[in-house]
Image 1 (cartoon, rainbow, N blue to C red):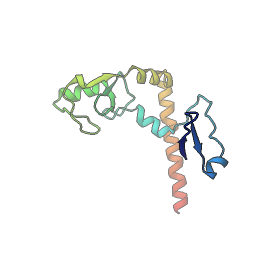
Image 2: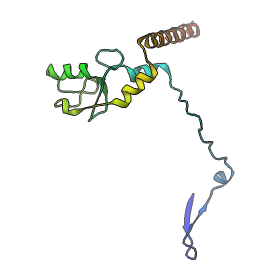
Image 3: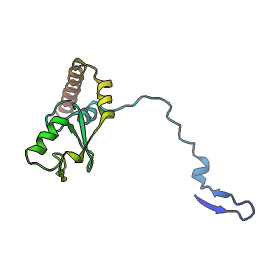
Image 4: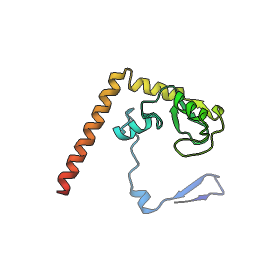
Length: 139
């Protein structure tokens, strides 16, 4: 697709290719639902240090990895001045910021610990189904 500026009107006129003339426009997504796999959701909501649900989330300013407040502060105090996920330098707690939006998302998804336990059971069930299907396919 190229554009030419008409000297008389000052507006651009577009030269469309045959494909662009025939193709249908993409439909706009109008729903407010989001589909995400349980496995990827679990990895986003899990602290890589304690492997539990994020609590009082802190995000590194440099690499944007998320950790529990207690976990990352303990790691920094112990002399480990780097991100536990990617090993970028973290000089002090000033390299961290609170993430209240992420905490609100977690509270919305799992208002109680029982909801989280049910979610973990579903993830484990889906993993076992995948393993059994893959073993049936290979045998």
